[in-house]
Length: 168
Image (cartoon, rainbow, N blue to C red; front, top):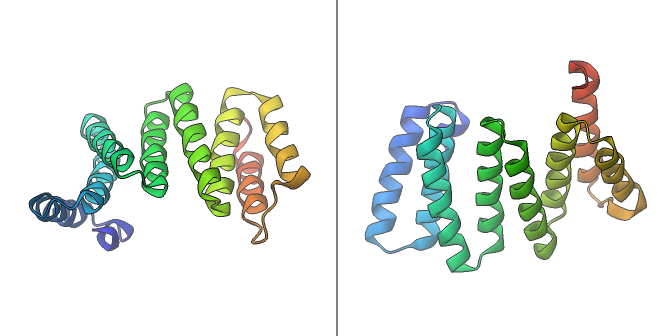
């Protein structure tokens, strides 16, 4: 499913994720059920079926929490945030991304922390919350930097996007 998804073959991705979901449910493999549901949710989101996407993401999040797997929880929260963003609900997107960022910090995952900061910075830019934008950059400047430069790359990328596309 993931390979088909990355190649833009949505029908093939859906078929693979549906088969994976069936097989993993039959095997009672909660982790694989979670991954299949999240994949199906992303396909549904791209297909503009936000109701199906929401149902998949919520079920996946419940499983991830039951499994107590922070990485899966963060993935599901990010998916719900993208769904909220797609629906134009910046408040809910922000809540989900804040929760995903908290999971990334607990896990000590520098790339996910950087991506979370970039997502929250983009929400702040859209809302015109310049204090939050400035605050996110100050976190980076005051020690939020990570060795691989991902914080810099993510936040810099957000600002460059708005420099080119125009600030909201």
